Length: 279
Image 1 (cartoon, one colour):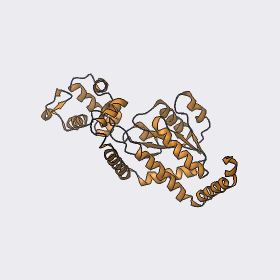
Image 2 (spheres, rainbow, N blue to C red):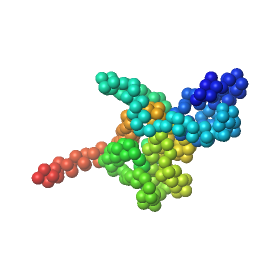
Image 3 (tube, rainbow, N blue to C red):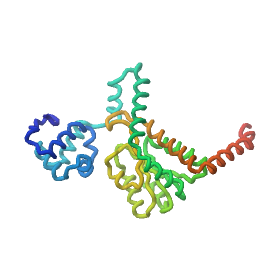
Image 4 (cartoon, rainbow, N blue to C red):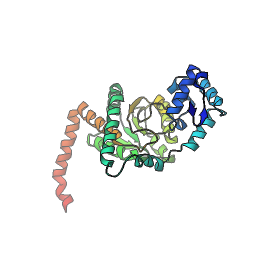
């Protein structure tokens, strides 16, 4: 067999090395974004075995092998878009994208833990304050989440997306609060700060992610998985939105009287003051 142009005699490999070779061949675009610990956990072989295998195929170790893959198979916004443009035409786009979205939703439904989902609902309802950390394209999903939960009378706030401004939020978070992190593709420095601070203070972390293997998964209290497609593909936000809407409805069901009372009060306020705004 060949791994990135290097001939490997499969018969000379041990059982563990065959597992590594198979994983490397099938996951070329994912490996550059995994740590050695994550890779070891995913393949279920030791870190030392992976390092030895990388040396056996001509690299000084896993780091050099990973750098080689990054340079050879770089993932950018442009080539993620190219991956889907190469597959479909403008006439096929609606049906292809919709069918893909259905597949992502089905995968999310199959892999989403009901136990974790229920834990998330309870953690949100018990929290004194709810904070969301939503960098990049997840900001719009967090805005929808905040808009809906605010109508139910829940205290929900946003953590700054990046930089030193996140500390302005962190100083107010207590162990009575819950932080919801939207984290896809890779671990940001800001995410690590929030996870570290959670361990120090003791507040709950709910992680919404498309990653199965990640240090974020290991360090979060509750993990909700969504499927957005392969790491090198144009990523869909359909499943994350569906998950957030499911959480919103589940919260309303759990505290039905309070939720409906708030919505009825909203309606009364609109009726009472709508004439002022029409002027």
